[in-house]
Image (cartoon, rainbow, N blue to C red):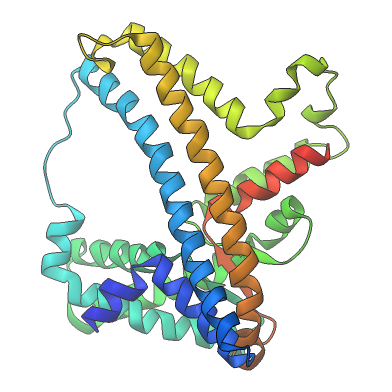
Length: 309
């Protein structure tokens, strides 16, 4: 159980690679296609993680510099590591039971959601078990609470959000599995009532010389360049004593832009492999099921829509 939890369910590249492999096997693909498809899905997740890591690495120094300037210190307390050491078994059981409940809901109810955001399969039981511990629960009641609440979120939140997601991507090929579901629902609700799909910022008459702003990597890099310079002026600790603020900001902007490109490539590779591979599983176990992925999966569709404009 610990091996499955630590090395498969909490390891998104391995988890998605195995799902792709199982789907291809069910579809009776050739050995060559199975190896290629499963490894490509895993590669896509690794590339996506690498891109996200570059983005976080470019942003993190800004946070540290601002905290230093304001004199803010993060207090040491109960962390995920220390909590897992004491309650990891309860979290693992809650996740395992929650996954079974989640699949039962998808199989026997109209809510056809399969939650595939790997690290969130661990995070939700962690949060609910932690809340139960804080409330004084223990034993089977603690595990049951974590399992049921996790399964309900994995199943129902992506399904509730589906129309907003499908409006963005232009089809019904997948769902979003992410903890910002409530905020997404609020923003979608407000946008649907005060927004106008016929009017878009893309309709603004912008000179051709500024057309590079349509490239998300370039726009993101420019924003990071300005942010680093502004923060560097306010909080000089952002740059080492012998460093140059402008060059530091420029290098951080390049890393951010490159991270976006890497992440988008990983997203495309993952989509191209995991969705066709999952068809075999869905047809056998959960007919008509929709996959729920992490939020970066949307970025590729936003870029495509921008380029179409």
